[in-house]
Length: 374
Image 1 (cartoon, rainbow, N blue to C red):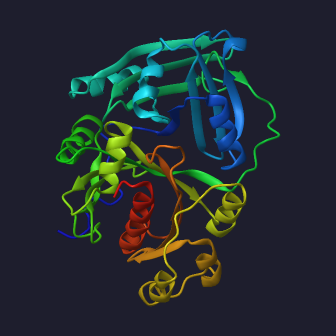
Image 2 (spheres, rainbow, N blue to C red):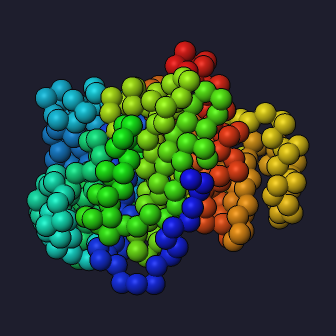
């Protein structure tokens, strides 16, 4: 089976309406230092805070934003907090992919009726700025999906957070929104989670890739891209495929100790300037060999961006029937070879860079070999 585009943008009513991604909640061993990294390197702006100074005795959290991207980074203040055990097991990474909805309780009830397992039931958080209603279900691994209704709230993220009025550290890089988020699951589990998103949340299969599409001499993986009915939210789900050596998915599962979020793709309207700023601010990117650029232009054809700048920065290019895209991938964001980021600019294309898979995965394998994990 080759890559297939199975479910283009739907014009039908969603069976599980999600307005958008609300925020991504990270657990970190040291939230203050992690927040500084994302501010100084990725250009996120510190806009909200919860900690001992606001009455939170067991957790500290930093709210970071850039355009429509909203990251929440939290650490436990006591070793007995459940977050501490999650960090011991998984290391820094994504805990919650939260959705903005019209009615959190109704969304939670609908998901439970369709077979989802509750992470926490409907609750209302209130303050002088109004009320936020929330509930959550469990997804793959220890990842959860919170449903957030904040239409009656005017404060910083949630009640209990203090707004931060200015940030002298943040150096914005032109990032706009989250394009997609990728989850890694164990061999044989991909179709289970595909069915979960279809049955519980009304997603459909947007695109599929098998081990012939995503493979190198040594390893391979399989992937299905799930999308909401309105096409705004896309979740590729990966599983390893049998190969001669350990795949990048196997390495992730080993060091993360189970399924989880592999990477977050961040969209920009000007990838050359964004990547140049990110690199200058300390973000490390994977690089492909120079041979890639001697072959890519015959495949991709004419584009708007200067080829020499793309090659200088290591940005990859791919084209489909609807246009082209430009993308580049960071090295792991932490010490464990788990979570990383993609920077992407779409010029009409709605695909995921199939033409770049081989070069990209060989670059990842070189990093694996350097770590002794291939």
